[in-house]
Length: 398
Image (tube, rainbow, N blue to C red; front, side, top):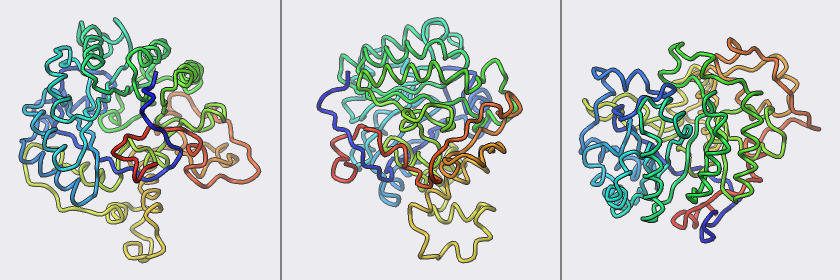
C-alpha cells in the first residue's frame, strides 16, 4: 500500500524532470528494447558509456539552464555505469534529484542498493516486463527474474522507493495482474504500463505480431490491472494508448504525448529536445549548443513555415509543449488517425494509433468518443487523477 506520508495532487503543472542516456551498454537483451540495435552493436557511437566529466556537464545544463529539479538517468543500464554513485551524488548536490531507470539486477547485492540510497538516489523506476520464466525469456538472461525479486526485497529493506515500468507486449499480458500484485507487495509508488510502440530502433521494421498486441487484446487485462492498483491506492499510468480503447472512467490514467508534460515523473520536452541530440548521447565529442523548446519545434517542417513562430508573443509556454507533442507523435513516431477518428470528440487531445499499427491490425477497433462538444484541453481527463508528489516538489507542484 502507498505510504500514507506520500502526498497526492490533482494539480497539473509542467514537469521539471530531465532525462539523460549515459550510453547504450546493458546487461540484458530485451527483444522489445527501443535501443536494441545500439546495445548489440559495440561499434555504434551511442553504445559505450560517456565519461564522468561529460555526464556532469549535461547535468549542469539541465539544472542551471533548463531549470530541471529531477533527472531520470538511463543507460543502457545505469547501475553498471562506472562511478554511478559519484554521478548521483553530484546530481543531488546541485539540486537535480536522481532517479535510475533500471532492471535492478545489480541491486540483488544489498550493499549496492544501500550505496545508491546513501548518495541521494530519490527512487528507482524498475523495468518489470513479466514474471518468472517469462521475464527471463523476454530479457534473454536466465535467472534474471530471481535477481530482480532479490533486488526489490533489498529496496524494501533499505527504504529505497520504487516505481515500475511494464511494456505491454503479448508476452506480458498474462502477467499484468501479477505485476500489479507485486507492486502492492513491495509498496511501489506508481506503475506505468507502456504500449509497445515503434520508437528508436524499433522503427526498423523488425517488430512482429508475436510481440505486438492489438489494443482490444490489451484492454481487458490492462483494465483489470488498473482496478487492482486503484484498489491498492497505487498510482497507475498508461502511456501511448488511444483514448477510445478504454472506458471513460479509466481515461484519467492515459498519458499520450499531449498529456506527458503534465506528469511530474515524465520528461521536460525542452531539456529532452537537447539531451536527445546525438552529441549528448555519445561518449565522444563535445556537447551541442543549448536550444530552446521553441527553437527545437522550429526545426520541424510542421512549424518552419509558420510566420514569426520564433518570436510570436501569443504562443504560450503550454503551446510550445503541445507543439512538441504534435511533432513527437506525428513526425518522430508516425502516429495516424483513422477516418473514423474524425467523428471522435477527443481527437484533438489524442495521438491516434501508432505508425505501423494499421499494417498489423487495421483500424477496425476505433470507437469514436461521443460528447456534446469537442474536447480541446489535453488535461481534460487527467485532471481527475490523483498523482503522487514528493515533498521536495510540493511548493510548486501541489
